[in-house]
Image 1 (spheres, one colour):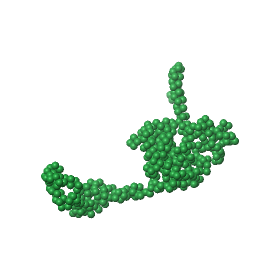
Image 2: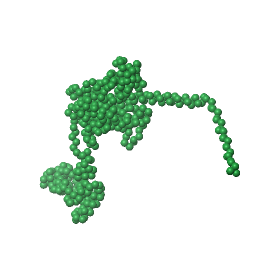
Image 3: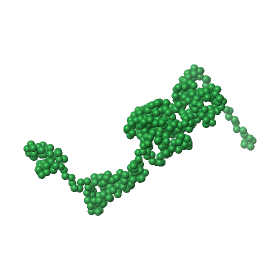
Image 4: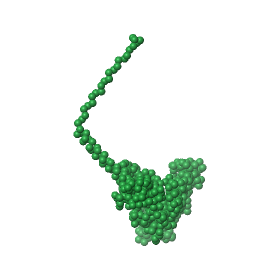
Length: 464
């Protein structure tokens, strides 16, 4: 009890004349204690009622040799339990003739050890480095100075084109300075150089959505050591676009926390609200979405994420990226960019009515001189409304799907529609086959197979 509390009780005796015995009965405080408080007040006033700290307060009264003994055992692998440490410390105290420490004292000795020292001693230098070494939280000096690229397998099940459960991946390109998401790619299957190139192409190109203003070529791209990030394709692209590739240290993902936190935000704010979400302890889920639906959900969230205030920079990623106005570095032409990053290519022969690809027909007036010739087409699987035509790696033109000139659709959409149409036809066949079987008379039963006449064993005179 502190001095003011003591005074509030003692004041009833000093100022109001209530006997100490009555105060003792009402407050539950002993009479001798009240008398001691009264004597201290008369000697030094209210200040004398404050509790005087012990001279050895905070000092451990256990023998230093026993403290060293407990600390040594606590830093030894495998570390004994507190109960074992207490038992060994008591035995050591008995052997050396010292007062044995209590269980609480042994526990306080262990808890007082430096956590970094404990991690280094029990788990090794790698664990100590990841947990306790100071990490310099670098931030790029301006937008597009440094981009980060990374993949994550999403905690959700979707339907693939054949209707089977599939767990998709997400590739994201983030601007380090503004935390803005410049490009992304949702796909099925393992990460590849193609998916990375498509995400990077979207990040560099001007967007069709004017609200998504992030674009341009970064000065540097920070990636890990995945096979897609160390591919010759990305290396060649970086040289052509004058992008410096920075690889993180193997086994040390420090500095990648910004994009990892974005992945966590996608999981908690987007995937948790969608059907098929996978939660810890419940790895099974019923897929309901297809890849296109998941892509739309993540795209809508990216737009919201870029517009809302980021806690680390105290402004929105979009506002931080735009700043006071500046001109991003762009490729010399979008055709050059497509030639570098659109590596999804096919060979086709130009017909008199255009280029036939995936059941669609693509036209352009520039194709007239190339009728009958074999060319290369490159395309983005997310948007088959147009294709790029190349003749011996020279860009010729962009051909447009004549049947859907203003409609964006993906290769996944086409495959899904085809499979759905085949399933519909199969159901029609199955519905008609039983009816056709019922309308036809049953064929007569086949006659039993004729028994073959068993040949007699031929005998000779020598056998008789």
